[in-house]
Image (cartoon, rainbow, N blue to C red; front, top):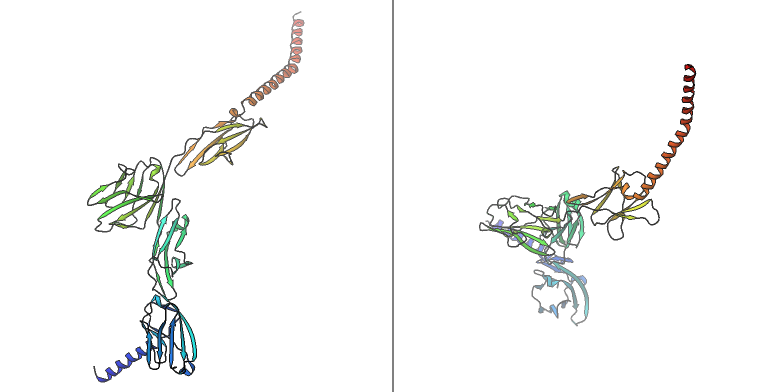
Length: 431
């Protein structure tokens, strides 16, 4: 390197040093920043005495008088003009800084105040999610214990929320969209964005006695050392099935003899399900918990309903049909029409039936839940209004008999007269 190169290098280093020395502290600073709080005086003349005070520190952090620095805290120094330099700010340097200048007689000639706030660099957050039994999900932005950060949530790189709430709630429809979500942690001096994830909530609803299988959405990585499926219900976590060192075990009686694990795919299969198998299932691969959550709801199949009949005390042509169950209830008539039921006093629903004078009309009650459906035996009108139908039949019979007599009265006499006339003519012809 020749002399010119050395001079150029010295010039550049001096310029860089000058640039650093003239950096003024802003209001918001990142930990480790080197900067200066300027001392403002008349005509920029350095006064004979300068005192710097920090509102969070006892005593002077720097005091200069004459040509000597009398007091100085660690990490600060004084510039030629009396300004205060920080070599590397820390969180403890946050606060208000007051400078006071005095003349040679000790009289205060100028005073000023500057406030700074120091922040740590924003960490890279991690998005986690939990699924609920009804197919919804809660997204959480994990930033540790940091309280100074604001969070922004993104869906497909478009911002959807911007505040300090670390959670976002997704409806079942939003979960099924399978869109990528991410969060960003930021403060006035830095920001960091998480990796994007797609929420995968597999929700299964099964009847008691059925079987279910769950499998990771990605192939197992090479070199898997262990697989553990966990069952979470009401805040209690138990191991459903484990595989390690070539051995598979089901430590909990709830999963013993009815749970199997495919060690090549990671798939768990549970047979002969009971209501106790309801909950959220997670998988650990080689000791690391995976993001996927599988939600299982096991339900008892609905019973075959029985329709209760309640007579009206005010109108003999009206009865009430009652289906006393907690499940979804569907009323239908013999024409296939769906009828609107009313909430019953205890539970279930009721419908009002009027006597249509048609004994072949019938009504049914169907119970439904997600995993089963049962329909009652039909209830016919002829069974609902038995007494009234007998009276109706008797009345019809009387009317029919009366019509028969009328017909006989109208047609038999003329017929008799006609026969008598024929007989008389025959007698006359014989003579």
